[in-house]
Length: 167
Image 1 (tube, rainbow, N blue to C red):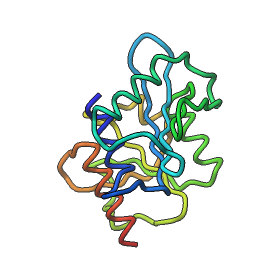
Image 2: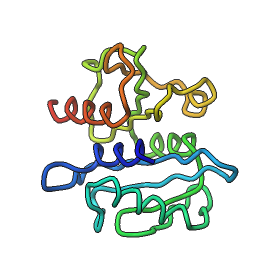
Image 3: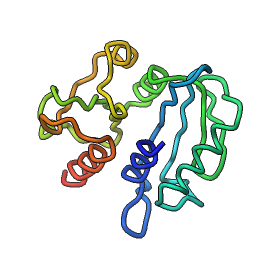
Image 4: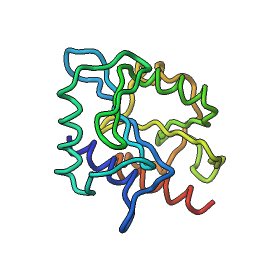
């Protein structure tokens, strides 16, 4: 859970505010049930503090609900919704909506080559690199490296924000 809460914190919260131009989708793939996606939307988020306990409470609250059908996001609280589906559904939706998508991977091309734009999506894994099955679900994305060392997800998110903020 701490990996997820740190990722949300890095993706959405800035000093005294929220990145309103950012969303983060958690793909909950473990357990016996079908995959679930939890969407945190910075433009609508409210009632969430930037501490791990508060964020974890929001995730746990969502997990108590029945998983909606794939592609049907159901709002759980202000700026937080969930849907059935895995990375392949998120990928399909992002491409349909005109996003340029990247996979963060230490063996990818240098991050200085990222083409910034209005709609960008980045896939990254949790504490382990994506396996071949995970990668096949999201297709042949351009791979972006943030360096040779494998970094924690929340650190990668902060670095990507820095790169995009600098463009």
